[in-house]
Image (cartoon, rainbow, N blue to C red; front, side, top):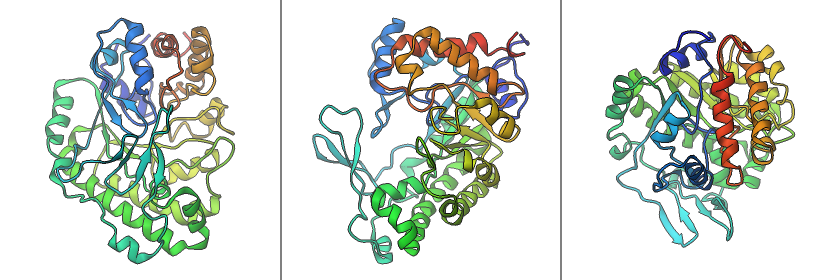
Length: 386
């Protein structure tokens, strides 16, 4: 094994497609790499760590903030930061199971459920340009969003050796499905293109302004920026046709990546679930550096050696440890073999970060979570396989 590197040095080498001392490890420091609150509580108990209040970082997905003791236990190489809470908005409680966010989207947790489902798209009934104009959009200038960001980024950069990840997510495509309703927006993409484009642009304009104000504060201190979490795939196919993607979505993704590239030297991170092999070249072309979560259970995505051969010189693959079958239903030995395979396929030459495919779900045994992260350290040393 090579001489031990500091985490930030290790990450920078890997993301520049060079072989560090070992493959970087992630847990909950970007997006599509986290752990749900129930699974996290189980993991802490399994590790014999003190019981702490579970802090939720994404309410609708019930994703937990991972505490420093767990990050250190598993040698996680990243530390995340994101916007603060706006001064002039607090999510509105509709009833004991429902709330409204600052975009006017209502979500509800079903009885016995683990997450909040979309139940109230604000544009469900009126798809007009005037409705977009008159909607009470969030204020990107709200100072609460940026208060303390510079101090946090500078502290992480100067007082730790970890790679700093900034969550400035400007996902616009999937968010418009939430604003309009999934069935409605699918139809808009072919039957009312003018409205679909206007809704995407209005949402994206606000998010880019937020990102601009944040980058003014933190760009010199961050190593990775989460640019987008727009999913383009389902389990067996792409979510829209290549024609629709390339005519309506890709130009706006290119605008977004150009915006970030002009304002930061950090690596740019794209989260994108599903069977997206047909779009990988497009994601390279728009400017993504890192791709997460590499959903190996989806069509065209399981052959990670082929992914590496085809796109490994352009994309850093971030994820790949199966959460559909192996983590919930396998043994710790099965998990180790999964980690070994993905490292063997995707780590040579750098350009790989080990983590789960999307958030670790409540039914995943904590022994399997530990096995995944420990195996990443055990088998991730360079040269791979020695």
